[in-house]
Amino acid sequence: MGNPAAPIKVIEYGSLSCPGCAKLAQEGFAPLVANYVSTGKVSFEFRSFAIHPQDVPMTVLVRCAPQEAFFPLIEQIYTNFNAMNAVYGDKPRLAQAEAAMALPPAQRWVAFSQAVGYTDFFAARGVATDQANACLADLSKATLVADQAKKYGEAGISGTPTLLINGAKLGVSDWPGLEAGLKAAGAR
Image 1 (cartoon, rainbow, N blue to C red):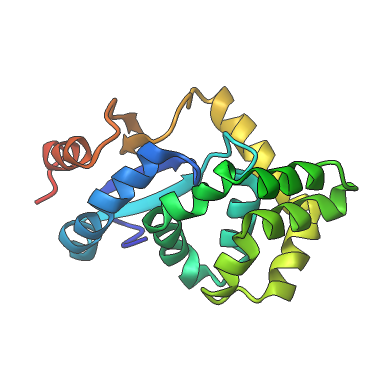
Image 2: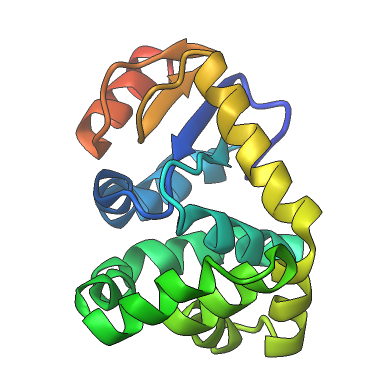
């Protein structure tokens, strides 16, 4: 997001099921965009790091949407974080999701997503059910998410959110820390 030639580049490795990532987005996404990215001096890249099984279908579904919907969908996931994760306390739906994982690979993520409500969530935000099911049934998409997670781990990313400014890890995971890092890098 933002100017690809921006002198300050922020990368976030975030899990779509991470409460710390949700808090960072809820507190920091709007001011990051309004005060820094919109100036052209800061660019922002979000790299979905699948650390929990539910990260796989969510990442596939975010990527299934048109490119311009990428950040709005991520923001919606984090805005609705508690509601989206409430299903994991619902024993019948959780059992349905667990049963989905025993299905043949091409059916697994489709059934899982339907069981936990992701298909409906994304349908309400412009990703048609047929489109979502086709993306989730395409095993190459889930494999790519898993391969990227492995690559990120091998590169030293061990948790989420992990924030980098111009390639250097910040060592903070909250908006005040990120904003301080931006200012230290010269963003105003």
